[in-house]
Image (cartoon, rainbow, N blue to C red; front, side, top):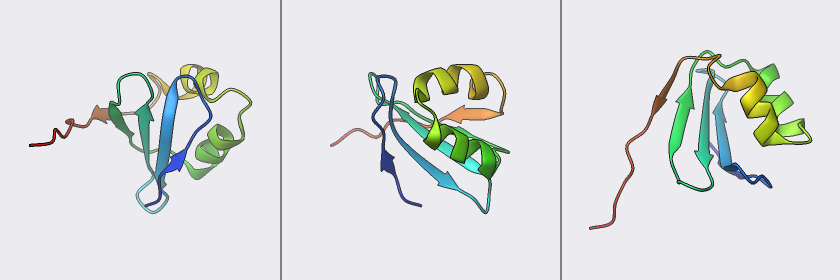
Length: 76
């Protein structure tokens, strides 16, 4: 899985597992990473192509797909 850096005020980077249909999003301000399940490849492409990825997230992803927040890793 390859992470892509995003030019977005809200989203820092994205990765997509097409086989499992899981979208990973890292939020710019907090560094939090969320996984969104049952996420179709067509929606991933629409996110990548969106003029505003933050607005796309708010309108088409948030509260529309099952998700989980991943634990943050801290350096020892």
